[in-house]
Length: 174
Ligand SMILES: [Zn+2]
Ligand SMILES: [Zn+2]
Image 1 (cartoon, rainbow, N blue to C red):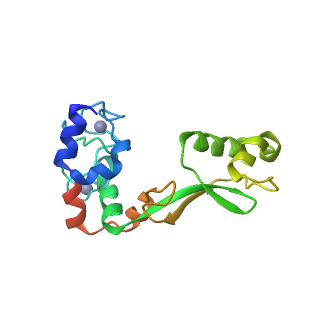
Image 2 (image 1 turned 180 degrees about the horizontal axis):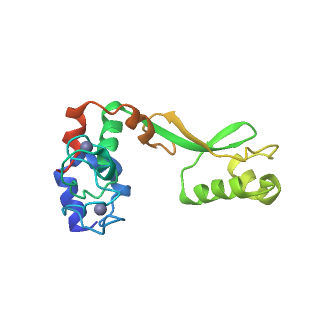
Image 3 (image 1 turned 45 degrees about the vertical axis):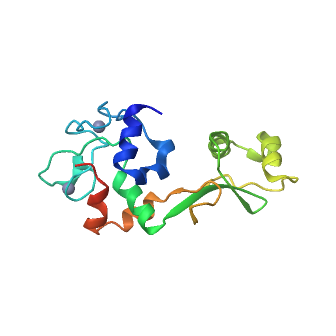
């Protein structure tokens, strides 16, 4: 782990829950952890309302890159225990997407003309039984518990739950 990431975890211990998502540099404006985003950066959040800075309309500076995209929404997920997973549905049974390889397979299935034929072996291995049917679309954002396989922060539900300023602003590095 880099010094910058160690330092940010010391400052915001709650980010430990999202450690594998921390990035040293902002993907858009390239600022490092601890530096203020450039105005217009699409990752910058508003220090007042917590929304995306480039379109919220408040008269504020962008926030500081913390290493985590949408830190306030992640914070809300932690506070309210909002988690979800994505799944491939084989034989009408949901199989959570838990690895980058499964994620890749899920995307391939969506693009395939005949996924059952093209990915028969992968699907059978995943299902652990002969495959009768596979849904051509991934099921996204199935609500679950934090420790369930494939669980990740449910940012969609968090953004619907936005509007409790105390909880949100605490999570932002202003
Ligand atoms: Zn940025
Ligand atoms: Zn704002």
